[in-house]
Image 1 (tube, rainbow, N blue to C red):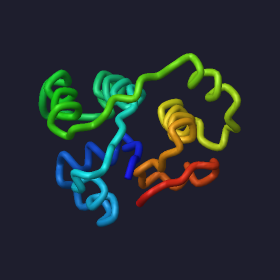
Image 2 (cartoon, one colour):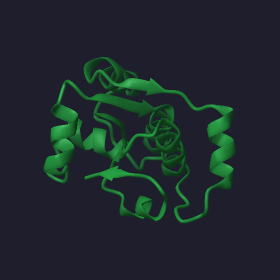
Image 3 (cartoon, rainbow, N blue to C red):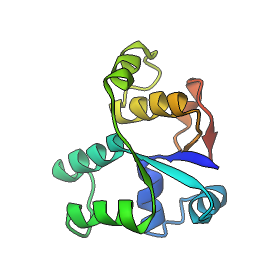
Length: 128
């Protein structure tokens, strides 16, 4: 299975947080899955860490190393095409990071592993 991992899901996975659903745990734990990590999620972590909305418990560079190397995630860059598509999305969800994930998931034709039910308003498959 190919899937795009939402920011909160990977952070919960790294902390073994009980909020992570059993299905999400299964998807993340299955080494046969091809999991994608959007650069929008790295950007979100950086912004939230800087503004104090997120405590990392370790240097951000180390966290990014764990995300990429330790979890075997494939990096999904942000393109101008993605940005153009974000501009055309309905404003069901105003979070710019999540809006980018919706566009990227649609373009890649993959579900998003997420607990965010607001994304259900878009034509995007989710796994939770």
